[in-house]
Length: 217
Image (cartoon, rainbow, N blue to C red; front, side, top):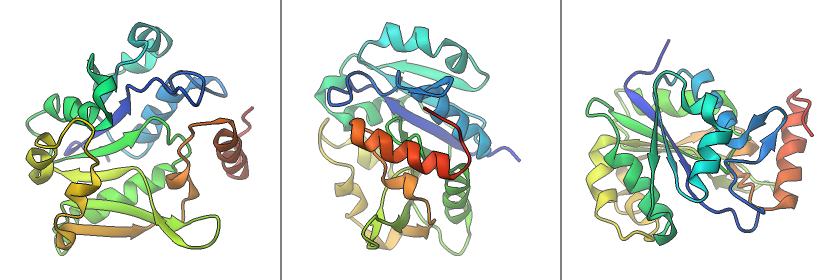
């Protein structure tokens, strides 16, 4: 079943300086990082997506042309991406359709997330007993301690608070503003922690994906 009430918001505007270039362009088998993250959303049932690009935008658009041209995908070229990641999030929220009840915030540097994780987050957001405005995934870190990561479900009720942040002000200031509206979902997915921003993180992501049966280089 399609999740037409939520939109997959993919942040792919950064330059990826530590990674050697935009992570939207990184190759994961026969896919770019951007195409892969969009596919994960589709596999989780998300029918609509907004992709925010910035650094080397023309190159990202050309490399991801097929993925960006898929039904339900809208692209936002954010010229002010260097002001901070929150500015990219704000650009994506400004482009979200009026009937979107929530966004699934998914940075493109988290390509190892399992689609089942996205599904679990959406199920918690929809649960009537929860009435959660923000839903975070939690899974054990490498040392066994619990840790939260991405993607995150953010209800429309919070959009105005995010829009009021400074362009580089962290999203956690909104998350911490009212812990009563935040739900935590245990997902057992190490991919939520894998911010693939350098060669070592890429190798960890590849190892995780291979352990799930994917044959990637």
